Length: 554
Image (cartoon, rainbow, N blue to C red; front, side, top):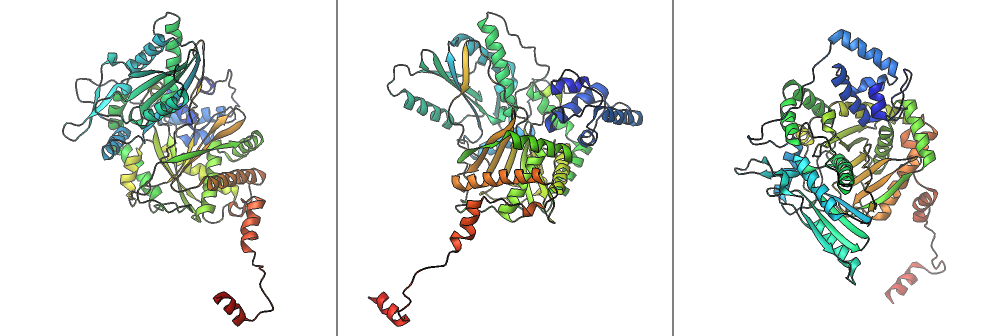
């Protein structure tokens, strides 16, 4: 109950409380199991929490496991010597290899653009940035390969985070100059062997306003890490402005310690078990999702992209939560089922593989680290046999739980095991992504400053379609990203409409066949079935064929 209260942010947890009704989701479930194994020595499978989501039932299950097996020791992540060469994590190794293929690529930049309104203490700001760099070895990591094999070297703690400063206050073309600086920042590649792989630009636009650009390479950071960075920068800046010392507790371990532990832990029987799961699960999966595109697929994949906003209103969100509770799924699983059903209707394929990012921070000692932990899971959904909504939800739940139970095997190793056909024009295993942001990036809390996002976001995508969603208060909101080499905006607007129509139909009747749900709005249906099929045309009825022929000749 104490672990639930801490994770779910509630004061009291009763024995009859339900984990998911209190606000639990898949990511919190993984974090709960990590804390449970540390507190009681019980390695509980994720499916057990979904099967027994009420506290008293789960506690009974845990007691049974303890009486049967006794407490199990979880191997600790310990510090490794910095006198020996430091290894890359599996994820870093993949990105390092990709970077060698295109050293000028900016596809793996992690950008942050902020508008700071108010009085900025520039000295305290720069000191806060330098302190975050000194605190996290991941941000000071560089990747050298003297004999073709990459190793990690760590820059000294006093290296300082490089920040370029610009003053546009007296420029008549300040807006254009700001846009140029933003583009220049986005298009400047990193040198993985020299670093640092994080840099900033502080642009003064007026006496009371700055724009701050922070760019990191994905090989040292991920989405969760942005949240850690925002929290720590806020705490450090508040302390430094007030004349206080660094308030952050020292880190027990660093990312290079995790990388060494990962290679040791993911080996032997554990590696074989995970590898066998993915081999069985993805064997014979379709190499590509045959989506109808507005243009032929280019010979090499283009990463140029755009985004459309997606909002699932409060009423529909409430109904989706009710549907999820009734069928033992999370909101993520329910939306995943709907997205798969839309892709079935678009492609005509009933065997669909969708990529899902996993935070991959199942150990609580990793939660406060900046680094590249995120993994990609290939979820293969079976929509054959005309399933009902309820049946599809059950299949999706089984698939998602199975993948999350085996989420430790890095994606690049899954690709090596499955050996799908490889082509330059699309990504292996899946070309469509659903990212559910359970761990939303917190807002900056800087004294004397109003902080808001600046810029239009990043105009790049890694996949053909990328659905990014999270809960925002009473609604579910996010974006639908798409490859502009393949799709027009109007096409993606229609696809967004199909998804919303399908979600509304799912909550209305869970027993209906998914394949029979009406997706088309009345105007599109009328256009396809009537406007395009109008054959009535006026022609001169009183003339013979040879007279019409003569008229054509003339």
